[in-house]
Image 1 (cartoon, rainbow, N blue to C red):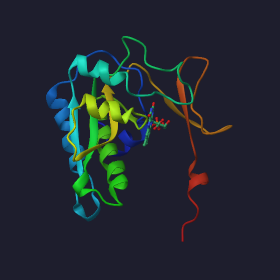
Image 2 (cartoon, protein in one colour; image 1 turned 120 degrees about the vertical axis):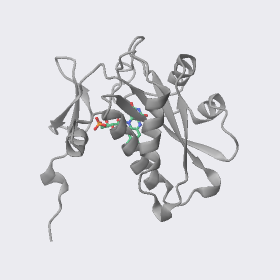
Image 3 (cartoon, rainbow, N blue to C red; image 1 turned 90 degrees about the vertical axis):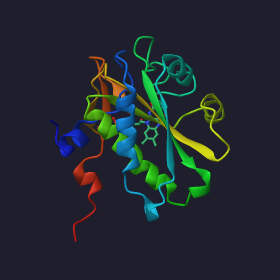
Image 4 (tube, rainbow, N blue to C red; image 1 turned 30 degrees about the vertical axis):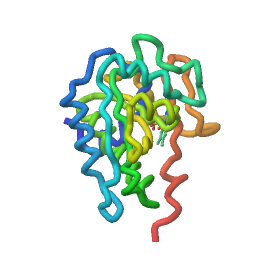
Length: 191
Ligand SMILES: Cc1cc2nc3c(=O)[nH]c(=O)nc-3n(C[C@H](O)[C@H](O)[C@H](O)COP(=O)(O)O)c2cc1C
């Protein structure tokens, strides 16, 4: 069993997936973990749609964009595409200036919960929102905020030190390398 810190440190965005399906219970578990995240003023504005059927997952695939710095070369090919998605939405009547911060905490909880099952995830902000809202038949009072693509990983991206810039790249072995700032870069001071 991975510790929380191990999960945080080893988590990488996954964009190539094994085709083993995820169960309804698994998706419910990740949404449950998301639901329990911190929420400003405890407003809890977030709502979810679990996309589990193959048909809907295929349709959702057409409405999202992958790995902007490498597109379209790093797009998941057939046989590597997500087997499920969770659409993260908000209740418009319950939104506030804090909603985007709530989203950050809630989505990370979801991704870490999936990782506890060995399931990989890609947080996707680049969504065709009007079309995805139609596909999911969301009611007027619900705003689609982002989407999380899910499935067992079929790649092992790794964290690397920043040499040139923050753009992720594929190395000579085909591994996706994700440059991260070091502690020295980010810790301004301890006072
Ligand atoms: C708010 C947000 C939106 C993102 N949108 C996309 C996206 O549309 N498509 C994509 O392939 N990755 C997307 N990502 C994943 C980032 O590219 C990824 O987190 C980043 O490259 C760092 O890699 P890591 O998650 O492995 O640390 C998004 C991440 C965040 C936090």
